[in-house]
Image (cartoon, rainbow, N blue to C red; front, side, top):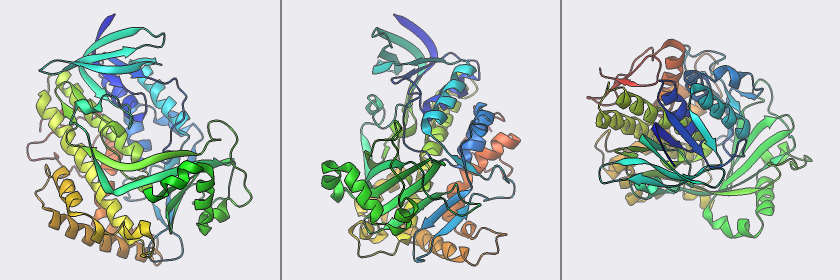
Length: 485
């Protein structure tokens, strides 16, 4: 059986739902294929304000997210860097994005993702759960559609002008665009994580903050999801793989005990026994990107395209932002306002830029940690970044600025020093100005998020940065398409 659409989206997570909704809202025919049946478990519970108050408002689900009862998050609290005492940052990065929009949520992804998926269906997308995509249908010119198995086990073929692969890090079809993945040796880590039935909370008003603490073997996250549910995970080096494979739960508990700041918070608290939070899970937490994010007829978004270390909680933001960029390109091509090649070039440029700023921030952030005796942390020094990796990253950023590997490393050193100095000023800040804003790497990292929020609130950034490239495109007031400048 065959059917025809304007867009087929593979994957119903935040990236897939974003792309499907954004194109369906323009009246186009959209098919979303998701292999699982929602609600389903997913890691990545800590969100950024750009997702909550920017992306969700553009997609029309902001009110539902606000009313879901998720834990309010004002920023982050960290035991990281030269100061032995925890420090914290606020999302109040600009007075034009005031409370309550200078906040985010800690979310149970099963509930949050279902809100987005329901939003796609309400917007007019045809959503088919339990449908597994087997391969793309393509000819010498472009991708034309996909073959999939539906929920009843029937083999089907669907055709469309465009396909967006948003099926995550386990994507079966991403190699059709840009070949394999380019992995970062700098962020090649292992994550082991589980849940407690409660746990202590930080003092108000920051009780909902994510808490990240560095320790000898790596770092731990501590996310208060509900009063009776806390997500705790360790990000460690691959040298611990053997211990984790032998006894994941035991290794997880050992990592928690090795970090006094976190072990105190869960002292005497039982592990969660409600499904799906009763399991200890392991993920190869490796950062990667692709040589290309699109080709004629097909684009990649979310973890199918790229992934970066989770310490800044950027995963859902990067996934949904990339999907929105792809949807803008699809919409502009379908209505004829912008040629396909130009629209998707804008998608690629902006997506790579956003990945780059988070990657550069995280390299500077890791370099702040002063534990030089640890294998994990000594490997996370800029001085240890392999020239080959620096050159590969320069290639990633090559569409934006010409830079060789030596220049890249010099800039990373400078950013790390600036960030370290700004964090040192937090303790003596008068609260009227966020010292982190003095570090250019911070402002650059959060700029797109602020622009997204202003797009949702005001119909566009108040300080319009202009196109991403000299011949680039602007964004329509509804945030859903490109327009020529």
